[in-house]
Length: 111
Image (cartoon, rainbow, N blue to C red; front, side):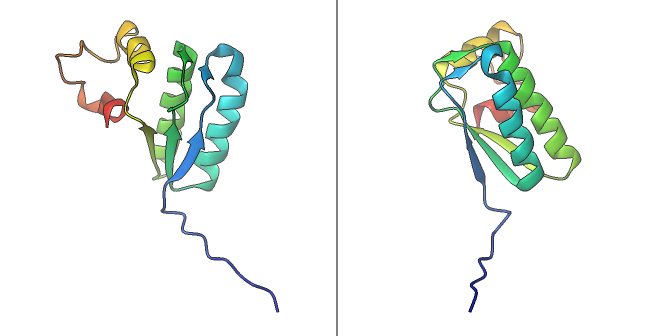
């Protein structure tokens, strides 16, 4: 007798990111994000191990989020932007200073 396992595609699927979220890892990160967007309804990008971040990672996440939204899916980032990630977001002009709230379209970095 075979067993069937029901998968709940609405449960967040974690995509664990490496420590280096840089151009050197961009191809691998892109592949992970594309697979998650194809296979899951609710994608959670886990950046808790991040120690080095550059703008290529931010671009990949924004592109994946846009692709997910076009398919009626949701992409979020955990934990909320760490200091290393928030520094890149601030330098890129995506997030304002720490004392100002982020623009609504970019608040997902902070939730």
